[in-house]
Image (cartoon, rainbow over all chains, first blue to last red):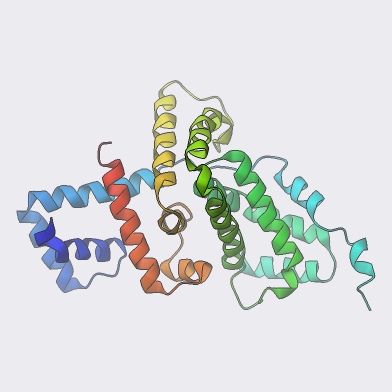
Length: 82
Length: 187
């Protein structure tokens, strides 16, 4: 892959949505002709999709109650009021 | 969302603790998810997420109302998780094992409480594997990948949360993506 370093940079720019139209065209043309880069790009997009597919996790039901029980009580602050 | 949050913050500043409870309700899942993906352990994630909210409450008078509240809250949570990861580094292998067995409790972590059909078990296993691969990333790549692909934040927000230049955030995301490509290419 070392000969395609600039192409890998274009892949990242593409994934960051910061690629120029010109480089996007270069990337497209190159991917069309190079199976190695095509597979590389595919694997990178697949890895992202897998990470994004991880289930949405919810906080435990008693989470808020536990936070509220841990925060300093208002009466502690009374002495600080003027 | 931001308008409601700012109203609640003003109420908290006036001494209304219940208004803070509403803020916790709005952000608890995102903060818990962030901590869980960073730490890979439910109990630690719970502790860190709770600590993040407690710190936000104690320091609420320092919050710059011009700023996006979620950015500030995520910064507190991310820093807590990074500190935690750095502290436990010597026990990495032990913790990795704990993180693995933690997967046994994945059922209780799924957003949908309803019983799971058989065919979803496989995807649960896959998700545990993906989580393990995320945990293998060095902390500086893990944080940007979690913020970008799990919390779905922009590069600008990530740069504000981590207090790093956008260029650095980009480089870390690129390296994180390269690492994940190698780790997950066999799936």
